[in-house]
Length: 149
Image 1 (tube, rainbow, N blue to C red):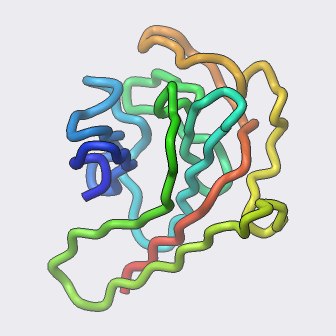
Image 2 (image 1 turned 45 degrees about the horizontal axis):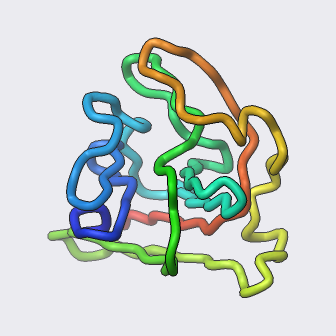
């Protein structure tokens, strides 16, 4: 599963947690509520700031059950080649996903999050658990639609 292996990260639907290199990121804090069928999950990378974030339904995620807000920053110091991927661990039949990855130029408006790339909220580092911030701004990214039969 993405995030359980070295060099990968993932936003897991079953628990809403982020995982990277085999460890849970933001230890003790859910990144978002678990997600289910019919939801659109996106992943974006800000190459200028070497950070990544996730979206859900077109909004940067980060609200947690503890009311903490993480400003969409999943990881920092991203470098090297990145490859989009989707992984699933399912035991039932009838699951289907649709994955959309923007073209090499990354300009397709259908697949690009339309947030402000220079917003102070978008460029801000993660906030601590006690802090509360919000952001609807983000960078470009890919999206995954999870469809449960």
